Image (cartoon, rainbow, N blue to C red; front, side, top):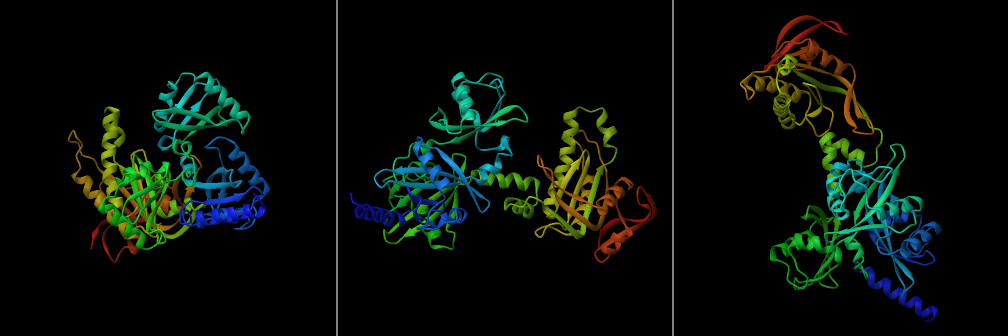
Length: 512
């Protein structure tokens, strides 16, 4: 074939591919052997910016070399690129007839972050000791441990250990695959020298191993529904999505499902909805291809991303979690008016001294569950618990409750404890300290990090609680003045408070 014929063939291939993956929410590119970008869909823009190139331009030589190396290995060999705070797994598939690479990017940012929470990681994580014994495996790794016939404390199979050591010594060594129960997992070993163990991260490559042609080799689900409502095409990775839509290849899609797909396609951008299948969550983008009178459905596995969000929202305010996910590493904010509340169960230490641990924890869980529900109702931020003490704050997030809501919660906490009885019929009381003033809030720590607050306002609220009266909400005269328009108070008088000296104190009694 002459150069002119080759160029014509490449041009025809680019024209034919552009109408299919252009709306794919995942990057899809076609790159010539010399590094020229022949085609790139819209989702590829972040990668092109990172590579400092564009359609028709050339990618850096080191990336060209990585593509060649990855494509030379058997299916599933990938490398990573980061762009705009997003990490992509890059899969390169060589097309020998055109001598080009089809390049597919999969957003693995969520998966990278969720590795910080291995017990809840939806992907397999295993850990081996220096001598090759299995010392840890999360729930998602159970299929792999069954396939290996290994339990914690036992040595991994000798052949697998040899592969792991070879892979650690040589990153270009053949990937490690474990097959079992109809699934294929790739194991990526990472040496953690500080703790002298090896982490093994598992990735489900079942669909990737089945890839054969464009877009069959796409590791993300791609489906096409024709004008008659028949599922005319679905690549191998689409099986979970087909199950979620109750659709079968070659058959008409259900009327309700079809109506929903059409409504999403005709609706506002980004034309997506979510579907669950087999414990995995997929974001499905629906695009109308008018030239083919069909609907294309592009799927992205967002299980890891949603798990990250859920885990973060359990320990952080929503606005702080969003900032953290967008790349902020140092988060510290000053607030001129924050309400801080401390509540402590009176005489809980002697109460728990002669009771079984399970009963003690059960009682504390019941009490704190009551407080958690009140915090949720008033949209306040639970900061932490310390033994039998409970700490909550208001006025620290734009979406949350303010200082008045903290006062309302304090009143309800005291009322709730008047009615509370343990399973054995015992009563409990709480002391509450509440103070309003400036404070700093932010994230501390790298492992098991927490959102915490600091400042004199926090210290004062804590002292007001510890020097308080059972069944009462103690506040300073300054806080009473701030709340005077909406609440009633009972004057206590001057109180000696550690670290503060004599302080004029009041009890918050009720709303006006």
